[in-house]
Length: 310
Length: 319
Image (cartoon, rainbow over all chains, first blue to last red; front, side, top):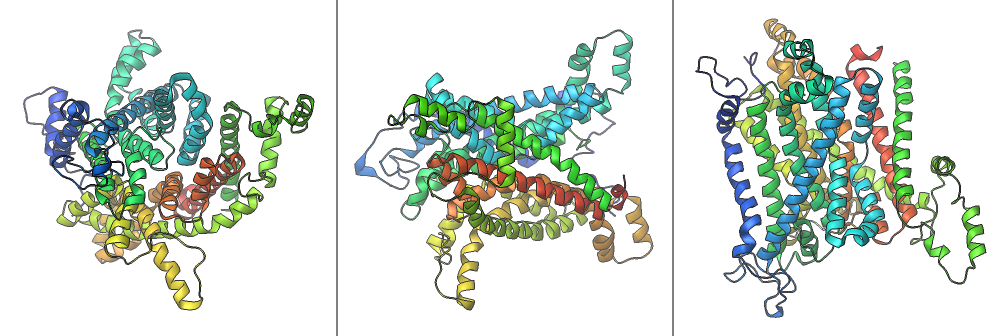
């Protein structure tokens, strides 16, 4: 019955009888089959565009205090309502969204970079280097991330703030710390890919032609290992956005005057009974962003990683 | 089996040391003096301050300080809370049981959701049930715990007014009503944590079962004429559970992270909310100790998972 069922509905979609198409087109064809992923990609693009260009059209200041309109629900003047100081929530969310998304993508870049580095070194070298790097990876996997994140931010926040200003300092710190706790899955994936790829004929051929090890890694093995890494990177963006929002929600992320989505939720928490909209809009924004990123990642998995390594 | 457990215990020691090195490095690299408040007091002359620093070992070389710190931590000598004015180990022992109860029950809830739903979905792949379960699982682990907590409070506490949203440890009375009050206030924190983990694990259980269900021995069992229920429970589940055990152990750090958030939302007096309070009050000894305790607990759970793994899969026990 279920004897030949694959783990994913589109995994067997690569129909052999077609005329040859480029790998990119083939991936796009497979991605399109995942309807939720396509819908998510559209919604996610709308969110990103709104956050990037929204402030150009919705020009209300994020810190304009208006005591005649405090804790108001959604209306034409304030589509997402106002907070306890009468500040417009739509403007604040557009501004905060930029930071949340920027943290997500920057932390992902850090995590993917470190992950590829560790994974590639471990995957190409055998023996003790590989063992040591994998021990480090397992160690990082068993570190309690949130307590350590809180501890590091608590200890280093003030110094960085003096160096590069409150916003940039916290931004760099949060991106680096979240990124340095997110590289382990990427490293494991890259290492696993390297283990199978380095024994393949095309690598052997390149080596026979005299390619150096760095060239083998960068030109031949790495491009073939990127599919699963892209998928893992997508999931890392979602994880980083959640991590940043969690920090802000605990009141320990960005300074209070920067309305990231998590911070808005933190502020809204004490007014839940009078102004539920204040919590629902930013929370919904986090949820929608993370959900769509996860679905896009799932679609990319079908498109790029049909063998489902790991 | 005993040998296997011993071996695992020996493997856990380097991890513990590794974590302690990371913790100590963070602390040692941190700018500012942990004893700044004492040292900058104008009533204390400079030479007394220097003597105090020397007596506290602050001028020793880094490795000496590390071993002093490590032995103090291992002896349970975790210092004195600046804010609560009691020993840190007493403070943590007061708070730990609540956290463990909340985490333990939420994990049981998560497994009670993930195992049946995941197995049922995998035995009927791409059916309506599978698709709905998959979508719900996606939604479940895309909802951050802090937002689920707020949604629960909005719905169950404010709109329906069924459950209290502030956790109280001083509920008066005794007997059944007292117990019922405790259950009522624990429902939301446990559900928030459990649903999140359950959603993440459901997908994993499903794919683990799908991997096993197409193996030949399952076909053999079916050919023998065994009932489908027996095949699923006795043949498929046991093998599919092996990777799930690893996953449960690997997600322990995330579980503790979620516990910190839920404890903070519902004001549960556990070590998570203790950590946040300590950070807001600059109570360094408490912050260090909580991080240390959570790290040890994570390693302990990993060890437990390894032992369980050996029991579930006899093939690896004597390797």
